[in-house]
Image (cartoon, rainbow, N blue to C red; front, side, top):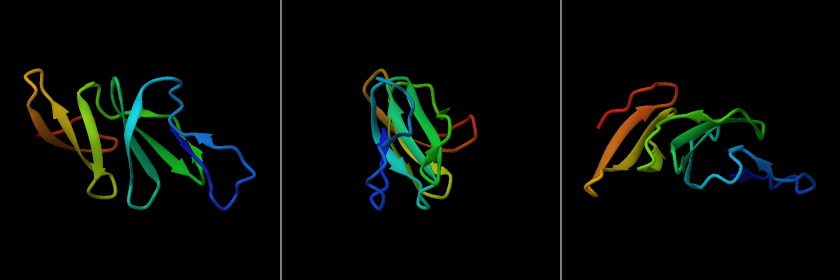
Length: 102
């Protein structure tokens, strides 16, 4: 996933996810623009964005069925998890915490 400062088109886009060719989709920006959460084939990842300089990606979930993250607070996120039976559930979690709840 890349970002580009629209007021500085002289610089190349910045790869904020640093995940190479891993499938990435459904990005969600924090309301203040300082965090980005995105889905990968191995679960959800998050990265801090400071002055268009990304930090290292962090694991948020390790379930490849997790999709569609959405910020509902500064660090609080809702996301969809599909079970093996094809049933979707909504989970809630916070960046920096290892547990999520249904």
